[in-house]
Image (tube, rainbow, N blue to C red; front, side, top):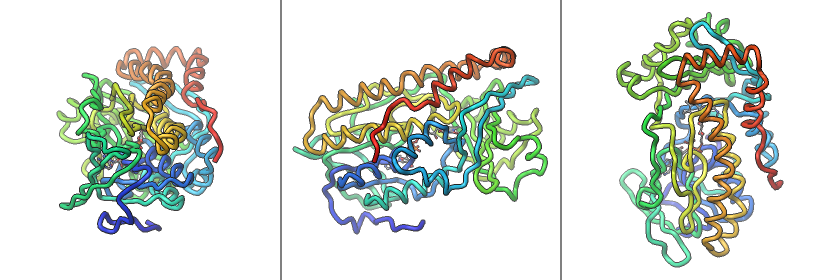
Length: 394
Ligand SMILES: Cc1cc2nc3c(=O)[nH]c(=O)nc-3n(C[C@H](O)[C@H](O)[C@H](O)COP(=O)(O)OP(=O)(O)OC[C@H]3O[C@@H](n4cnc5c(N)ncnc54)[C@H](O)[C@@H]3O)c2cc1C
């Protein structure tokens, strides 16, 4: 890490304009935007960064467009990710290919570290290895947030809290009205980043460069994407029972890939996620805004997760700036409305894709149809990858 993170013991102050919880894509981008606007910003992350994160690492054209608009175009350039412009879907003997607007694949290890650096450079104070819990009572003009770092606990106060703490939104457990539910048949994510030295030679022939390869079977699907410096991101959404019966994520993924002649070491570096489909009722409470996966998530398809995280991190900024000057319930209502608008369309398209991918027979039928009539898929892909908001510069 080429910048210093602050220990909870040496925090310069205990009162903040904004505390951002979670240093994933959403949290880092949001913290940078707040700090750039002169807000005293604390970014709290429960793990050490870089940390493993199950993700295909595909930044789609929408994510890249927004990053460029907010002055982070150099990140996309400097990380030297692998470009992609299409996706190959395989199910049994069926295959189909779709064109995608150009995107970049980069491991989350590299991307999140770079974004955290940007938040820090903009002036956000970064604390890692500290788990944050928002307290239920508001205290006049402030919210209290408890930070637990190893066996030490300190409390900080903030005019606004932005929760970007991922699928489990653990920071909000003390607020019953902010609980979210998982759908009954929700899948779990599993993934690994395979280093170039450990890859089978034959893989480079089987997995074309500059394309996402997605293999769909009855128990789930696995995406394979080349990333920076010859790394390969492997990320899948699988039935939890299937992973359990296989005994480990590595074995489960190899079972899906076996008929395609692709296998990976089963015991090294695999990670998992909780249930992937989260449907929170509320994404605001007094002085609280929720963004990114914590605000709602549907199964991944062509890299829309990070695009949504970046988009929400940027769109919440004007509301947070107003809330720092004085909380109004209308600010929360505005975010709830705006988030619903951003989320709904994407959700419908991803739900459609997920429903098809869950049924291999339907996937095969869809692939056959797409081979003959690709226009509907191009339309849907365009809907997902097109920027939904005109964002203010700066
Ligand atoms: C299998 C799979 C493949 C995917 N592939 C892609 C893809 O190719 N492209 C794409 O765009 N998206 C993809 N996604 C989705 C993408 O990973 C997420 O949408 C994205 O990471 C959301 O970012 P975030 O910042 O909201 O959350 P996260 O990246 O999950 O970050 C949340 C952070 O909060 C921290 N945290 C949690 N609780 C606390 C706490 N109490 N206190 C402090 N910190 C806390 C966590 O440690 C974490 O670092 C994929 C997802 C899965 C499961």
